[in-house]
Amino acid sequence: MQKNKLILSADQTKSLSKTQAKFNSLVAKIEELKAKKVEFETTIKEVEIKYHKQILPLALEARNATIKMTVAFDDAYEQYKLTTSEREAISRFIVGNCQDFLEGENMLDEAQALVLKDLYEKHEGSTFEEDKAGESEGMADLFEQIFGVKIDPNKIEDEDYLKDVHQEFKDKMGFKEPKERKKTKKQLEAAAKEKEAEDKMKKDARGIYTQLAKLLHPDTEQDEVLREQKSELMKRVTNAYSENDLYELLQIQLEVEQMDSDSLANVSDDLMSSYIKVLQKQVGEIEVEINYKLRQNPIVQQFFTYTDKFSDSKFKKSLKEIKEGNEMVRQQSLACNTQASFKEFAKQLSREYKQMDKYGGFGGFDFFGM
Image (cartoon, rainbow, N blue to C red; front, side, top):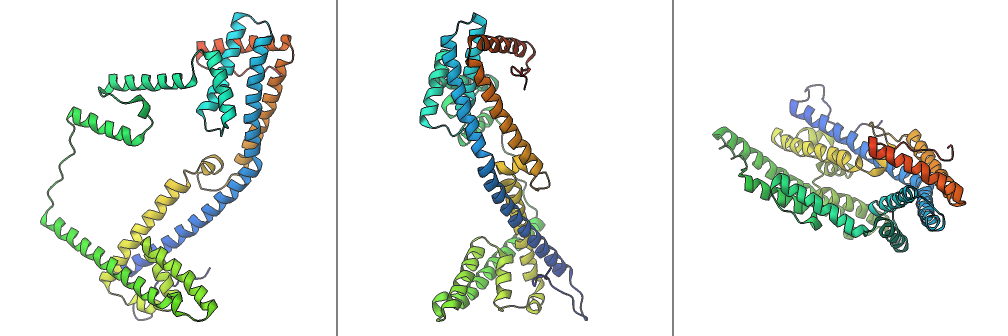
């Protein structure tokens, strides 16, 4: 692997200072994190493509088949003679299917949503919207009973609104933010010094940017190939400066030979300390992006290991489960073919619901021996 030119080397007459060694460790850390981020993003994109080709079509097939089956169950419910308990079980089954799709993010089209809402209202005796509003009102009432603060049921999923309600509760209860301790003379001096170093670093970064911008402005280049190269470099410079990416700015300086490793090694300790502060911030920002952006991607949550590696076994397992689910829906749909099979399905379903209500669990009966 080629050595990063930003890494400072000790010469024969002088070893690296602690500040230079710290600079080296941060440069190496950023290089490692940037490489990991690129590799992680590339793998996620590859898995997303694989997901859209192999799993999503099956998931959509399952959705459509389940909706079709739910409609068929409603037709059989009207066509066949059933006992009261059997009818209640089938209605509950239909309502459950409708609820799953209407509450989930299943990319229903308008026609499908309308069909499911009609079936829900028919078998539940109330509209889906009314029941959702009722749930929200119940949560709002519970919140008021516990905390003594009224909330708008229609905004119960609005995070900004709930933050305001939380602040209202704190004010009502007399909670106050702890008073900030008065800083000592030493702390004030340290803060002033840090502010001075930060201002200096911003000025230095601006100086690097200005220097590179003058050198790389494409309008000053007559050669078409060189103009294109400068244009691409200028994009990198502008992006790095806007994101306070000192690492990238220094890298570009090395690339265009406006600075070499020796001149970087000879910068003052104060400037090197300023560099270190900015690089430390960069390390934190890249780590946050990996931890709270990339790792929260649903694809990563479902198909990656805790070490951020794609798990082919998890992907194959998900694929298998969807295929098995599709087959189960196909088999369940066969229950609608005759009154005898539909009644038997309804009887077993009724027993399962009774068990679930009694013990709080669904046994998952296997009507077709699957």
